[in-house]
Image 1 (cartoon, rainbow, N blue to C red):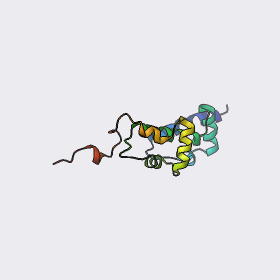
Image 2: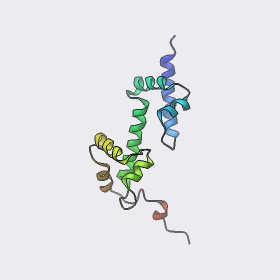
Image 3: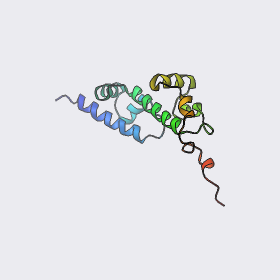
Image 4: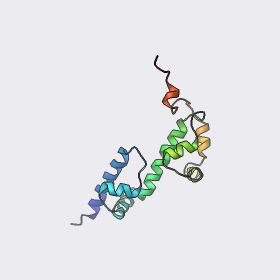
Length: 131
């Protein structure tokens, strides 16, 4: 019996758990190391089960996280650059171009049409000091 497909499937499920539990952006190499398989094994598994590479999956996940914070952020308290950096995008211009290509609008537009301005304020700006 060929265990390769089973190994790849199990590796992908473990990788998804690692991503879900990670509080910081993670690279495809770090993910493979955390799961204990080669990058190639993980890549084959992701392509078979999800139709994308681990890097593409991680990037999309970060983009969706950034979009959530932009959609719920207050433009008076945060910036596109701050959110992009927080989600692991080191070049704001490239982030904006990728965001536009994926979501069909600039990140600044998402931020500026925010329905609720209080959701992403820093805690020090949200709560009154205890006296």
